[in-house]
Each structure stands twice: as structure tokens, then as C-alpha cells.
Amino acid sequence: MTLTNPADGSVLGVVEETSPAEVFEHTTAARDTYRSGVWSGLPPRERAAALLRLATLMERDAQLLATLDSEDAGKPITECITGDVPSAIESIRWFAEALDKRYGRTSTTGRDVLAFTEREPYGVTAAILPWNYPLAMAAWKIGPALAVGNALILKPADASPRSAQHVSALATEAGIPDGILRVLPGTGPVTGAALAADLHVGALSFTGSTATGRNILTAAAQSNLKRVSLELGGKSPQILLDDALDFGDTLLDGMIEAAFLTAGQNCTAGSRILVHERIHDQVVASFTAAAEALQVGHPADPKTKIGPVINDIAADRILATITQATADGATIAAGGREIPVVAGGRYIAPTVLTDVRAGAAITRTEVFGPVVTVQRFRTHEEAITLANDVDYGLAASVWTRRLDDALVLARGIEAGLVSVGSYSEGDLTVPFGGWKQSGYGGAEKSLRAFDQWSREKTIWIQQHP
Ligand code: NAD
Image 1 (spheres, rainbow, N blue to C red):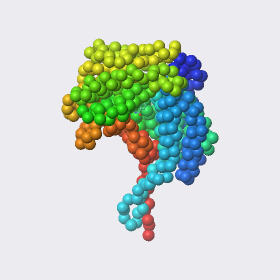
Image 2: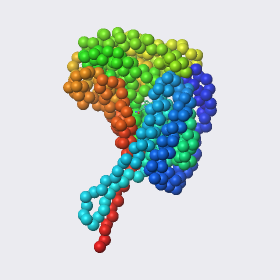
Image 3: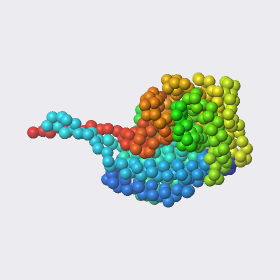
């Protein structure tokens, strides 16, 4: 597979695709490594120490890791340096520090029985990753999967394997036994599909599109019923109640980040702005001006806020979606066009669509690009109805200082995460995951993440006189 930089189409290198036969060899070897106990048999503190060393090595190579993600995925380098890389390091550290703070349960049985549960690793586990947060998503999987003692096979996205490959080398340097973390590059239909259907993989964690999630579930059902965890797409609302302007610049900054981080190619992108009619015009004016002021540029330029979209297919799809939205009655308040920033890259201006009809295709389809719609509402009920009128349920933000109203909205929204007074996924202490066709909810981050990578065993010991 030839890797190209989305910024300018230059060739970054060639990576060999892992064939289905090679996937099987790797999962067989991973099973043997796991069973040898070389990792799972270590005292938890030793596994923690190795993962902490890995985090320190990632810190040492932070600049390189940021560059790899920026080049592979076309993400602005500043975003990688200040966001993706530190958050990935923090994830590895957090799960390392948490791994020996978990307890099983003892049940209340008769005096002649000792019955307890403990959580054990699955053995061979796998993760299939999207391209938009290559390192950060890898860390969300590596941290808890390795912490509990599994062997992990990671399939990075076709376009962005290099940061995961580097982390795999760092894992060896950190003293994590060879073969415990394997990174297998390849395309979805070949390498990914082989992993999803593999008979050795006991648990598979997938982050990517809803369509691929369906294929993976089918493959799991038709193979060994592996435990599948799904983190999928989204169409998240940003809801502004009539006091939202009280937040001043914080509101505008939060809205811009929600809409346009990673050029809107973000699962939790706040791609639908729902605004109270009283402040609608003012919000549209200031948001449109802020969107137009964003610097669209080469991702290697530290001042760039909006980089290219990932490839031609994505660019053509995004432009077609905008055309369809205008045909359905929407007005382009900002952007709406491709801009020639760097030859060989596809750059789309931050786009704001107003006069968007409830139920129009653009309000329900994940665009996965720098495109936001604005719709107005009058009552809380109307806002909740609009917010929930999608198949997705990943995240939402609510902007109000009135706690009573915030609670009504937060409780009414069908999503795995609602942030109030900010656009935020929270820190590592809170679970993350979508509802509805965004996934199974709350399986990433926090101590809950360990459940995805371990299974419960009951041990019943009968005492004999
Ligand atoms: P994608 O579904 O096209 O690809 C994701 C991964 O699945 C890639 O590694 C790909 O090679 C692999 N794949 C594709 N077909 C496969 C198959 N048949 N069997 C097994 N694996 C297969 O998604 P993408 O374009 O890389 O990422 C964008 C999507 O990911 C968006 O929908 C976005 O919302 C979602 N996403 C979700 C989260 C989350 O946490 N919920 C985070 C990031 C991205």
C-alpha cells in the first residue's frame, strides 16, 4: 500500500498489507505468547511499570509521533502536538496507574463455600482503528487491553499506520514482551475482515463508521462470536438556549472547535447547531465570521486550523452533500466550496448552512467534513425533538447557565455524552461511547474500559469436613 500525504499528495512510503494467512499466523502466535504467561503472568505492578515506561518513551518521541499523524492523516500539526499526542500519552499512563486498583467480588454463600469472581483477560484481542485520530485511538485500546494482560493485535486505518507502528517499537523498548502488541497494517476488506472473522481473537474493539461496524458484527457472528465493542459515527448537536450568548467568546471558541476540529472529520463533531430563535441571527453572524476567519492551510504550518480532507473520495462526497443541501433549500452562509491551498491536496472551506429544513438529508447524514448546519427552535421540547431526529447518538453540547434547563435537555437527549457549558468529551475518568447507531455506549475511557478487555469468572470452592 502506498501512503500519501493528504496535504499535497506526496508519497510518504510503502507499507505491506497483511494478508489473511499472515493475520492467522499472527493470531496463532499471539495466542501462544499469551498462554506462555510472559505478560499476563507478570505481577500487575510490573505490567504497570512497563506501560509507564512506554508512556515516557512516547513523551520522548512526541514530536515524531505528532509529525507521523499529521502527515498520514493531514491533521494540523498544532492539533497533534497539543491534542492527540499528549492525550494518547495520558491514556497509557492512566490505565497503567489504574490497573491494580480493580477488585473482584466475594459473594455471600454458606459457611462451607468460598465463592468469588475475578476478571481475566480474553487472551488474544484485536482493535481496528479509524484514520482521524490514529495515535489517540490506538492509545485508548493499547492502555486497557495490555493493562489487564491481553495480547493485542492492532489494525490501524489504511491511511495512517505509522504512529501505531512506532508505538509498537517503543513497546519493545519499554520491555513489553515481543509479540504482545502487534501492529498489522492493511486495508479493511483484507486485513480488517480477516481479524473480524478470526477464530483466536476473543474480543475486538472497533472504532470507525457505522457501515463497517455492521460488517464486523456480522463477521463476529459468523465466526467465533467474539465480543465486539463498537464506537461509530455521529451527528451531534450543539444546542444554544436563549442565554447562551452570556458565555461570550467561550461559546464561540467551543462552537468552532466542535464544528471544525480536524476539519470536521471528527466522530463527535458538533455538526448541527440548534439555536434558540431569539439569538439565531446574532449567533449566525458571529459564527459565520469566525468560520471564515479560520486559517485553511498546509497541516505542517503551525498556524493552520483547517487542513485538507483525507482523500478525493471524501472531498467529492462532502461537496456533493453541500450541493444536495442547497437543492433541499439550505443557504450557504460561509464556505461551501473547495479552495486551492496546496496542489495535490483537497481543501474545503469551513461551511455554514442556514435555513435548513428539519428532516433534510443534511441534518441526518454524517458529513465527516467541515460542514455545519444551523436550525432554530422555540421551545425545549422542539430542541430535544430536533436533537433526537437522527439515527446516531454519540454526543451533544448544551449551552446555558440555567441548571434546571440544562438538566431537562441533558436528560432528554439520546446520546452517550452530553456536555453543558462546553464542548468536551471530559477527561479519562469518565466513560465515552455512543448510543443508537453510534455504538454500544460507554466502553472507552474510565474504569469501565477494562470491562471491554476482560471477562468475569466465578470461582466456587466447596469446603469439605
Ligand atoms: P471506516 O469504517 O471506513 O474504517 C475504519 C477501520 O475499519 C479502518 O481501519 C478500515 O480499514 C477498517 N475496515 C473497513 N472495512 C472493514 C471490514 N469489512 N472489516 C474489518 N475492518 C474494516 O472509518 P474511517 O473512515 O476510518 O473513520 C471515520 C469514521 O469513524 C466516522 O464515521 C467517524 O465518526 C468514526 N469514528 C468514531 C469514533 C468514536 O469514538 N465513536 C472515533 C473516531 C472516528
